[in-house]
Amino acid sequence: MPTELTQGSIHGESRQRFRLAAEASLDGFWEFDPTGKVAHFSARWQAIAGFEPREHSGPAEHWLERVHPEDRPRFETELKALCAGKSRRMRNEHRLRDQYGAWRWVVVHGLAEHGDGADGAAGEVTRIAGSMTDQTERRMADPLTGLPNRMHFIDHLERRLERARALEVWDFAVLSLAIERFKMVNESLGYAGGDAMLMEMAERLTDAMAKWKMTESVIARLNGAEFLVCLEGVGDENRAMEVARNIDAALRQPFEWRRERVAPSAAMGIAQADESYAHPEELMRDADTAMTEAKTLGRGRLVCYSRGMRERALARLKMEADLEQAIRTGELVLHYQPEIDLRTRKIAGFEALVRWRHPERGMMPPSEFIHLAEETGLILPLGDWGLNEACRQVAAWRALPTPEPHPLRVSVNLSARQFGRPGLAVHVAEVLAETAVSPDDLRLEVTESSLMSNPETALETMQDLQALGVGLHMDDFGTGYSSLNHLHRYPFDTLKIDRSFIQGIAEEQDSVEIVGTILDLARSLEMDVVAEGIETEEQVERLKSLGCPMGQGYYFAKPMAPELITAMLASPQDAGCRLPRSVEPSR
Image (tube, rainbow, N blue to C red):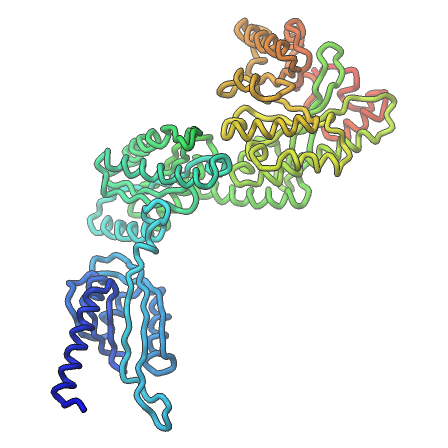
């Protein structure tokens, strides 16, 4: 049987081993007395909380007063349950403000030790102890790029606002930026390529801040392809915009991934800090609102926040919700603009163009909502609806008892997102089968920019569509990056000359020569041509003299409701329609 001296030696050695283990551990240890009012904290616990790393004993408030106000009620409830013997174990995660004012995320484990009670039951709580693990890096950093995350950024911005109010110096701004068309990058390069691009963008942002000696600026990555930057040392919007333009130049450098090359661009919004901002979320919100405004102006734009933007952003959110409902409830309609054989002045086909019959704003043209649909992804259900509706309408026209057969080929525009979606040819085949429409009656219009994101996939998709017997039109020819190369590589059967070349064809020799060259090229490739945007008889005659076979534009007819075309097709007479089978130009 051990002597009292021996037992004391064993306990002493045990304490030494525990102390050594505690010092080696990355966790902090704590112990409460049974009342939960007095506590003992290890050196590591103190270090996590930002204090000098030495053991400390004191009231429980040493800990509780540092817990985030939103987290404290739950933590106190669980701690009281442990002290009262209502629970034996505890696990709690909360934010702890350290000695320097920064919030740290910690995970706390606790265990209550009970004495022996009557009849072998657990008695009163005699001791409460546990550990605290610092989870800040995991919770406050983006796992992909290693940059601070949104939570970290809010924490930093809150302290930055406090400092600005104390010093009355507002020399910082928040920059919100989003890498544009990132979904298309993911679809074309794969998720590994998209992740690699995000890591590259994060590195470029970090390098840019170092290059311009703005290392105190904090960069954070949000979800997806959005970043936030707290720009330090910028006292006004002009300086903030100068820095943002330098960042933009760095981000625009080509990104290469496995022999694929992408030209990145970013939409940027800036909110300059001032005394009107009470909370970090307000500053972030306004920077994001400015960034959203930048997206509406085109690619690679930079906008500073101003009053009124918030109202426009709310209106934009409402329109997005309205558009989603419009697709579901049938508020969208297709109008059809005739494509005319310039030699005979008869209809050669139609182009389907979407309109929105808005319950409050009336009939809206696509220019007022297509850009929003593309940004939000609603272009996919909208495009699916448009393809189905156009084919359904062609089938209905085919079923009419017309006096003589009419060419009923219809052209449907495909967005870049639709065109880049896997299985497009299979989907088109299913729609044709469901509507009993011949592939020869369908033409799909694709812009050159739709081919740029993934040229190899685009080629495969077009070959599959061609195998179905569907026509392929290159829309807005001449406005893209490398039109001639695309003509040789991709199986288009028709070119649509952009209206910008047609506008001056009656007066400008340069326009005549450009259009003439396009027509010669099309003839050598055995392709049809449609001239878009014809507005005058002079343009018609000049195009005919150059040998242009087809055209469309307001000179012949505006896009027409399907009922008008139905009436026209069903009658040998005009039937009240401005555009009869033998076309009389509109004046």
